[in-house]
Image (cartoon, rainbow, N blue to C red; front, side, top):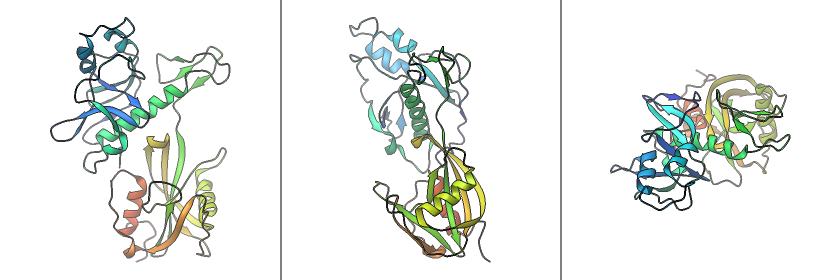
Length: 297
């Protein structure tokens, strides 16, 4: 899955520090990230020296000096010995070094190496949080960055931590059949599992029951937790569950959420191209290979 970047080691512990010239810059514009491709086509993110050395010969104002680029950065995380920093905005007159450009994060998908996309999307999650939390939602004052942890605070006492929303991914099993669906009105057209956000005051097991009932009109039992996954694309943590059909297998599709839903035999599940990124793909594959907890021998 996307977070599986071994042998690399991800460390999200916050540090109150400023970057060195060799540290990596993460700069975003919506769903794109500043990067280049090496001779093998692999993504390479810029370092501070790539930006500041290129612009050191330009006539720029004090705000646009190399020193301010360093000063206005925010520590994100480390991978192995590499430290990553966020720059929310580049000076308008800054010249992007030759070879670097804004590329879509979704184009970084690589089944064999999740590292570039994981780094890019996790950094963007934090970038969005910082940009969306400039002011206190209670009193309107500017929020300040805490020096000890990744937290924003206001003089009125309000505090903000990075947004993480819990989501359930549900594989509904009916003997040798699996419930598969396709989303309505989305670019993603592959088969998927039932999914939905947890509501306030709702145990995740109840979210499983509610989402299945709302989307396909079915009851489930024997809910079993499988695995979780951070999913920065939607500021979420995904929680995967397998469960069994309880009662009638008649499907009633909520067409506002799904284009279709159907029971498919284990051996008839289509072999769609896999990215290796998602919990959904892994759970479908487990059922397909007969490794789900409800396999009937």
